[in-house]
Length: 169
Image (cartoon, rainbow, N blue to C red; front, side, top):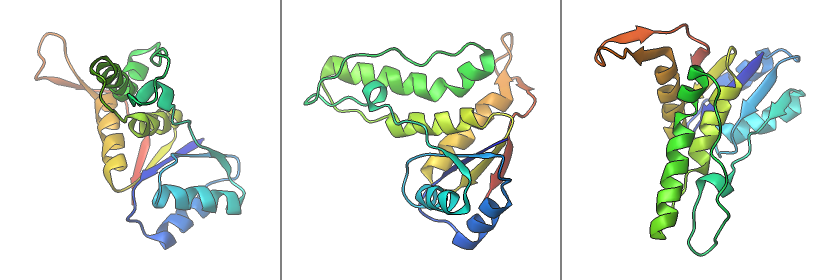
């Protein structure tokens, strides 16, 4: 099973260490490259001998700096409705980066897309939200993937089967 960790700077080290110790050795810990709690999870996972995965930031797709031209890559692809919903943040970041490129202004979206990578990587697993803006972004992705509007009545919502066990610290 995969365990995804998303969070910010405010965290309780003792609770987080206890949770990491409870992760079975056969499971994989997936965490972003952020500071604070995500850095703590990366360091503790290595010390505890847990399998660790850190998705790439991919600034070539999501960031645009007029002073550093980059070749335009392809946006992430998705083959199912759930994956399309989960990758919506990345598609938005990709579009914003291309819009910034057209008008020659700076845009940063790689860290937001990394949050979506962590959430998608722990499908059918456990997602640990440790507070902060990155955790709020992950919560929005989970909300979009657990209830959708119907085509004939956009105000009506249809609940989908939850694909994550969400743990909030």
